[in-house]
Amino acid sequence: MIVVIFYFLIICAGTGGELCVSRAMKAVGEVKDFRPAALVGVIVRALRVSWMWAGLGLMATAFFSLLAVLSRQNVSLVVPVTALSYGAGALGGKFFLGEKVTPRRWAGVLLVCIGVAVAFVGRR
Amino acid sequence: MKSSAGLHFKTYLLISLMVIFGPLGNVLLGKGMKHIGAVSIGTPAEALNFLSSVIASGTIWLGILALIIFFVANILVLSWADYSYVQPASSVAYGMSALLGHFLLREVVTPTRWMGVLIICLGVLVVGHTPPRTTEPKYTEPGYTEPR
Image (cartoon, rainbow over the protein chains, first blue to last red):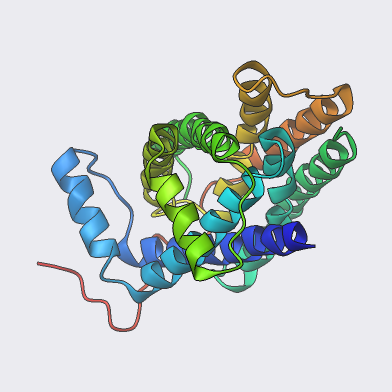
């Protein structure tokens, strides 16, 4: 049961965190200068956006849940199961970030989810 | 025109970094956590013991380093590309995880699981044929002001 809770946290907190981080980075603007000093500046600017902190908090929750699950189950099982977040990610991209998720992109996400389910069935 | 060769190139480059360092970090964490053993965090003392075991593990620190590289690549690509593009496109990492789990951790990866990984990669291929960016390059967050 505890493993199911950890999986839930990995998927929901992880996806929610990435959506928040994505929103923060869109606020910072497109990165065009990849020199180390410029990259540090980008990270500093990103840390001034509150969405980034919300995202980091959620991702930290997902990270420690991942550590807990990895201590109990094989990484080749854990990692594919966490890909269930793809459906939630596409929905979040559409409704939270205002992205245009085309039918082709939905089809790709659906294939990824099917692949995850097949990989899960194939566990030992 | 929101997509260009340059946009595609830097998007693919950073997603490649994510695909390499994300799974590597997971595998190193898996190796480190297997060494520590099953976690019990029912009491504060157990939680503290768990944290000290994590901090003392060099393998876990290497895993964290790999995940930091993954994270930086991730936030950089998200500064211009759609999340609903980057997330599935970077799922090639699942195939990489299965490979690393099989060869580095000697985990058994069944044919069915390989089939699942193949389907995931097909999904990535389909997503890869959509434009990386479908939103305006930038929108303003309340309370955020551009430096300089």
